[in-house]
Length: 125
Image 1 (cartoon, rainbow, N blue to C red):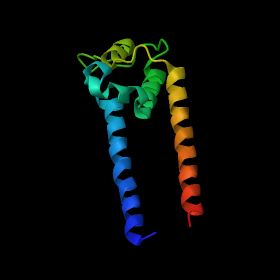
Image 2 (image 1 turned 90 degrees about the vertical axis):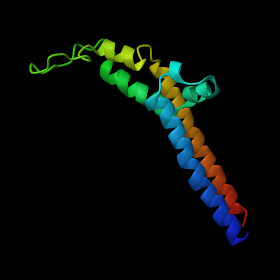
Image 3 (image 1 turned 180 degrees about the vertical axis):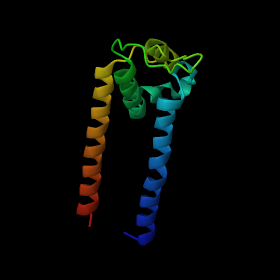
Image 4 (image 1 turned 30 degrees about the vertical axis):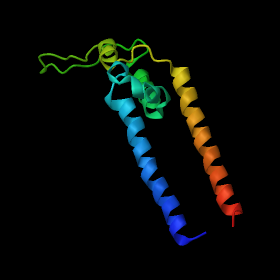
């Protein structure tokens, strides 16, 4: 295999990886499901960033949590009520099991694909 082909393969992986990470993170942190165009709604469903972000927010603000502390110097605390925060973030009905299964499936898929690619590259010599 030529040196140029090896460099092209690795530079392609270095280029595509961050682009996919940015796309998946945009559909997890920055946008709600109703704000996404129909062309990209499928990415919202398979975004592991979204699944982990919703899981973290649900574990912190969900499960019938009491009102949060609001300093007495504050005139108005909008997110004192965790339910209001969940509604504004559009995560009041998070299915933790499906998010966990999605994250585990992606981890297993990435692990298996990494092992297969390394095995292929090492046995191709």
